[in-house]
Structures are given as structure tokens and as C-alpha cells.
Figure (tube, one colour):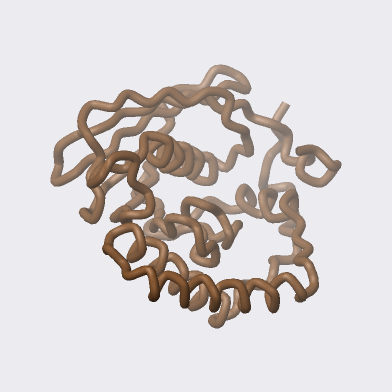
Length: 222
């Protein structure tokens, strides 16, 4: 049985990523999109490779990072995000983390009882030219559906995700993903959501999430 989240005391918040880490991630994301989008001269690419190798040697010589994912997850369910508020529990999240140089860095906030995700996908996320890969769309849905868990203050894991693709998902234009809790049956939370471009629904999703006891995140669960 899921305990009352109000009984939990929040763990110590992790240190936020530094401005330098965020800036480096942003530049690397931009570089990746630019390489896919442009017919780059081989000489330029050779210089990029050399610079990247030099930077890689410096980065890998640095100490490894240590983070506590369970404590970070637990903090999501202490308080629901406020209206218009977001969550930054995993700055390196592949979907919404601004510190991930290979991620999407999508914006996600609470809009009433719904989760709202806004993004414009860059060229590096294409499946076919000009169109986003279906797996990227699925990842966006998983993130926006999962954000609803913070709104309802119920820790859970994705059990099933079904995506219906109604039209191609374009690159370089603003996309809106919305999600909400459709129903709940014990530990089973049924979510639903849709993706829109200029008001047109281009994909729908249904998700099944399985609730777990909040103490799961402090007892070594995964």
C-alpha cells in the first residue's frame, strides 16, 4: 500500500549542474544538430574530430560522478509541482535534462491537472529526413506521462507504453505534448496523452504505470 507522501521528509537536494556544464551541453547539442543539417567540408569535420579527441582525453581523466538516483526520485513525490512549475530531478535526463549534451532538453511544466511538454526537435533526432524518429516521440510521451506522477504525488514505474502515430512528427517546429491521469485501479495508474503540431493531433499515447511504496526509493530498490 502506498503511504501518505506527506509523512516523508525530503532528502538533501543534489547539487545543481554548474553554468559551465549547462553551456557545454548546449553547445554540443547545437553542434550535433548542425552536423546533421549541413553538408560540412571534410576538413572542418577533421578539425572537429581532433578537437573532440583532445577534449575527450581531458574529460575522461576527470573523476567519475557519483549521484543517488533513488534519493533524486524520492524528492519528486514530497510536494506536487506548482501551477506552471517544472521538475529538474535528473539534470542529465535524455528527454528534459539541460545538462545532457545528447538529449532533447525539452521544457515540461504542470498545467492544472495535466503535464505539458513543449519542444522543437533538432535535426539529430530525425528518423527520415525532416521527420522525427518514432522512438524519440515515444520517449517524449514516456516523460510527459511520467510527469503526471509528480502531480498526483504517486511514485510509479512505467509498465506499458502504447503510441499511435497519426501523422509524421516534423523537426524544427514547436510540438505540444499533454498528458493526464485517466483512471486508477489500485496500484495501476492509467495515463493518456496526445502530441500536437499547430493544434493538429499527430500522435496519441496510453500508458500503464505501477505504483510503488515511497520507501522503495530508500531501501535500495531499482
